Image (cartoon, rainbow, N blue to C red; front, side, top):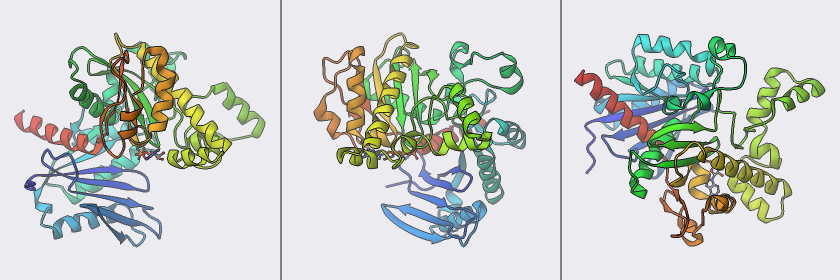
Length: 403
Ligand code: ADP
């Protein structure tokens, strides 16, 4: 029996979309989730998912506030609204200021606003979500959970770019890392799954979704990660290039006369799996196309695996010992082929795949996918960022009540 007396609403607000999740107490699966899309456009809609059933509601061109009000109306109809004890918000960028999740106050909102220049695409939308939800639910605490917070433990050598240090001191140019909430959740799950000592272990976690990043975790702490000043650095992603020689950008800009905004679009929206394949940003589509002989799809997946294996190998050098490589995110959790191709490349580190168990891990199943004689393990762990946000929110509330 689920206890619905204390519900946490999780809000992940983007510029034209909002994801909601409603969690009961410590329950790991949301009682209800919803996705509002195309906000501010005539076709804006809210898709609500509950017990596997989807309902679509038009928002009549409405924006974030309309989506939130619709969702709150649904919670009210169910008699759940008065049980919402806290709201947790996903924040992309917490800079160096936010090293952990925190309750939102006017002062904290001002500080979050001040960080918007570091993440102009994401933070203003996140903050809009916080303000909208605080106006709609003024009597419950709101917490902010930062994508960057987990990586604030990176040592200086890992977070520093080799540019004149005025760029860091005056402009905040350094590596921050992202996907931290997912990496933190998966790191804790890995300790459980593999029976590791919480104070003595080394992991490399590959979060492979539309965005992709890999992180080295030493004794529970992030010590290096593939994303940098923005989520553009590092691995090949759905539409993002990941690493590219900045010299190539000077060349493209000079030769093709691209503006900075056009370069931004080229690297963030037209590159990655999509740009390489000329077909799709979706790994599943590319796997199918590759089987039918599509050369662009093969190239895209080959480059993806090459870069990933190179990063995993490089990140392992920030550890004392590599206990395990963990795969998560839509691709990491579901694609046996991409895991197999990556682990084959990691034979140099002594990793050996167990093809049978690898083939069994999809759709949320978690487990080890390497053979007994593999030098380090590899495992699949399903991420759950939304629950992590709900969990942090309850903790932040408990800490403030205890203080
Ligand atoms: P987001 O970063 O948007 O949350 P997801 O974590 O849902 O994205 O990952 C989306 C990616 O996962 C897509 O590239 C999709 O093709 C891939 N994916 C999902 N299921 C499979 C599968 N069975 N085989 C290969 N790729 C898959």
